Image 1 (cartoon, rainbow, N blue to C red):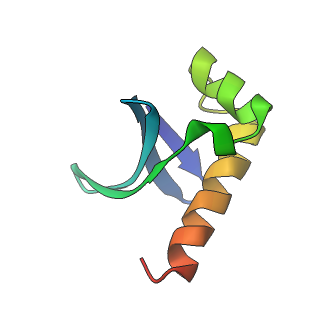
Image 2 (cartoon, helix red, strand yellow):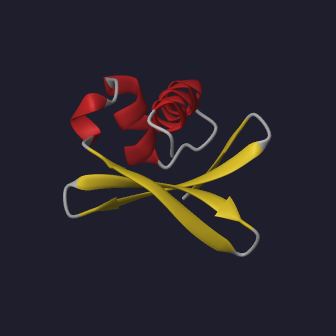
Image 3 (spheres, one colour):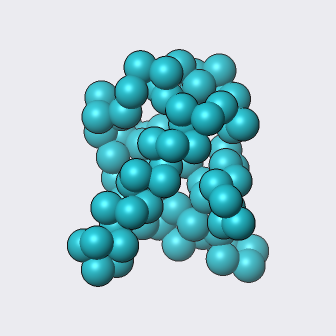
Length: 74
């Protein structure tokens, strides 16, 4: 599912017990990280389960994941 955070569009996909997080670049996805869904807040996990891409808890969680990736040099 695609989630818009600020001016960027991210893609999140649950797969094999992890949450794959990527950034949409043109027509492709650049995968940034695999995240343990247990590290997200309950509200963010619930939004994922509902497919609610406009949920602020989910968008806040994605901001944090992206910031962590930037700080690691990704």
